[in-house]
Length: 284
Length: 284
Image (cartoon, rainbow over all chains, first blue to last red; front, top):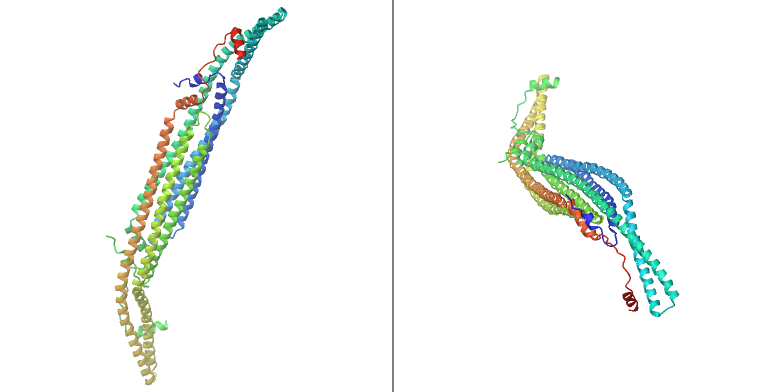
């Protein structure tokens, strides 16, 4: 159970909490966009790495097959190709994730539009309490100034007529001031109710957003870790394959494929000419 | 104990085993050069990857710090920087290895030059047996043809003078043939001794080369595996750090840093003007 952080912390004398929370909600869209950008950039990096590895595998397959070392390049080639494949696998996973993030971004935008409408009454209540608070201050000052004026006239012993005129002004100012006090009580009540409700709504939206974004990050981590394990397997296979290609086996393989023969030069004896056979041979 | 593959498999009637083994030794230089190229290309790939990751970390640090999600980018940034660091670590290890391979290449070149001199006697023995074998064949043919000629003259009842002339020719041919047979026996013995020794020398050189090259590949695998483990640790830390940044903590952090106040708007009562204080206030 998450505490009501927003409900408790976005009041204050300027009543600007609504504005802060509303903008925070909108920043959620930027976060989604940036998260998508981050994943896309990472995907691009993995793709470039994969392409380079494929190129490297081709280099390995173009290296000389002559000599005892020749067969070893096959191990390099196959391992490097597999590495390229692993990183391409990550690219695919990230591309899928980007699509999900974009879909979420669209849903988020719609939800925010809906919320904007839903909280329009709260925005009005904020504007009301702000403007009524201001009017109340003005009315109080005006009332005070009228009281002071009336008092001055009295002290200076001004004509009764002037004092009465001032008294009428004071009475009017008193009434305006009282109206403002009543109005303030009403908008304050309205603001408090609406703001409490909206602060909780904004927190719910934010909570849902963070939960979703954390899911996306978990999928991201999971993909990266999964491919990391595959890469580890490729390294292990490479080490094993290299261990299996012993020096002895390379020498043997070379001797078998490039050997010129096992027969040493034989003895050659003097062979007396058998003219009968020779002549026969010439005639044929 | 490696079997004497080279000693056994590079004989054959053309006596071309020396040539094959000598060229195989020279191919060892190509292998060393290509191995160095392969490692350099891999190093270049890792360097490019590392640079891209550093750039990505910078992107993450430029993303908005506004909103509840802001603090999460620090985790992305730090993790991505660490990944860049791991791959740069691999680049350093590979650069060191390339230097070793190059040093080995120089030593190999020197050793081959020395070997070329050492086996020059064998090359001569090969050329000798090849040319003597050829001369022997020619001498045998010549001897046979002279025998046939003499026999023909006899059968045709040619003049005794002609038959005697032919007999002298036959005798000369017989002697040449016999000299060749003796020469062959000598060069055959020399060739066999020298070739046996040299074949074993070539195998020793090849064996030492393959052992060295396999050491280089092991160092390569070891570097790659070591950095792979470090990368795995970075991924694990990322997952843990993300798990530690709970939704609750993000909401709390945001409320604390961006909160506008915990005080709800207070009640405002009508305040009667205290003219004495007000006038005093105006005078001051």
